[in-house]
Length: 238
Image 1 (spheres, rainbow, N blue to C red):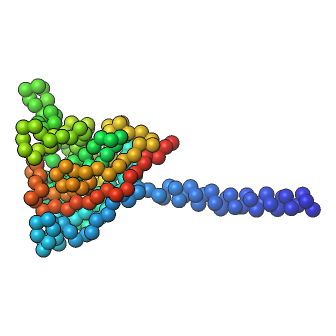
Image 2: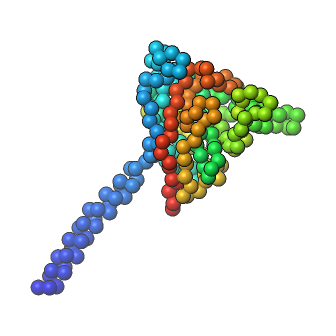
Image 3: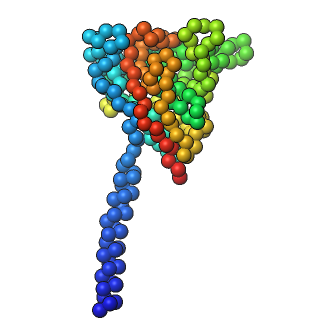
């Protein structure tokens, strides 16, 4: 009798394990990026004129959500979600997206556009382009995002922030999903499993994630939309 009870218990335990373990694996696999910030879908340009807010979606400038997740074991995905994203990226060369975050006490900025030949080809403010030293103009490619660190005010030009360029990555603009996905290698920003991607603050706009009209530089007097990163993302340990 005791033996049969033990067999019955073993079979029951096996059935529970078979039911629970696959479900747990699927749940983990489907967890995906973690939302780290949200924003109303009707507040673009309110810093200038609240009545122009509906134009934000048409210009691919209305922020709604931000999330962070792992693209693979060595790459982070920073995802910006918009109310609308035309296939052309809005105004390709004229709409700028930035995301400032903190890593190990240092500020890092992602700065990009659908196309960015105005600044991505030759940016003297970070030493990337200076023909006198052999640093020549380049082709930044499509959907380039500059990964920048050690940002500080320019000592000779008022209201101009200069940064060290850590690298360039190519983002994915998904019109159907309304998302911009920026892949950042961990090595590029000196991050590792266990590192924390904490909220950062843009020195001009005072928020973490911003979208604003821009040529070479942007101005806080332009209509823009901003979003705060409110949640810290911890890079999973292996």
